[in-house]
Amino acid sequence: MTDTTNPNTSSAVGGLLKGETILVTGGARGLGEAITRAAVQAGANVVVDYFHSEEKAKALETEYAGRVTAIQADVTNEDDVARLFHDAKAALGTLVTGVVNNALVSFSFNGDDRPKADTITWQDFEHQLLGAVKGSVTVIQQALPGFEEAGYGRVLNIGTNLFQNPVVPYHDYTAAKGALLAVTRTFAQELGPKNVTVNMVSGGLLRTTDASSATPNAVFDIIAQSTPLGHVTTPQELADAALFFLSPLSRAVSGQNLIVDGGYVKG
Image 1: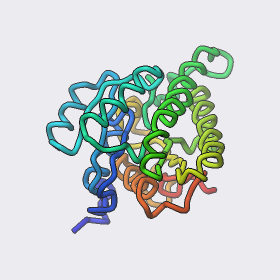
Image 2 (image 1 turned 135 degrees about the vertical axis):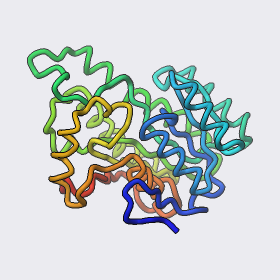
Image 3 (image 1 turned 135 degrees about the horizontal axis):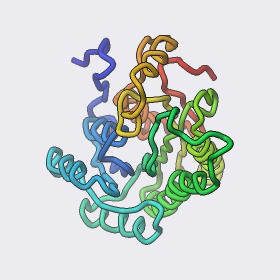
């Protein structure tokens, strides 16, 4: 039985994703790893895309032998992504029916060490836009032929609650995720007739991922004190919410952005 009182315990429902093949970009570490594990526990086969995290990706492949396939690809490179889908189908013999655009180009969530409005460069913005927008669009475009063959598809983009509550100067990161939200809604409109849903889940600072490991404990404590549920959201909690959008339960939901942060941000 799942311990629902423990925020670090997954509530993944066995069989919810049975028969699905899910691609998780950046799926070997942090939030991506949590989504990979939750999807496997829910019955899916998972393709873990990784860039540099080969050791962690291969460890997941070994741990979930026959259920997880690890493939290296740079999501900002069209040829890499085309190869990713080709190799995934060759390895699994099944179509990818859902994608999670989670890959994050190098970024550290430490507000004290981020460039402010008077020093941030356009190159900083380009760097984040390349990963969040180009990477996601490229993955979706390569997924579409398989979605059409399967007769349906699920796209889940990872956003941020900083849209609503920009309390730290992550200007480039927040702008890129804001653009990805726009892509989420416009793609949902166009791809709906193909029976493809496109949604977003937006967490706050997660405790803890590689990207948030630089965050001072005092910041986590402040967030926990201001959160109705009384703790900082974990990667596992966000991953559980992601399962809904990857499953048939969300078949009538598209173009939406769900905030998963324990009630910290409203609306």
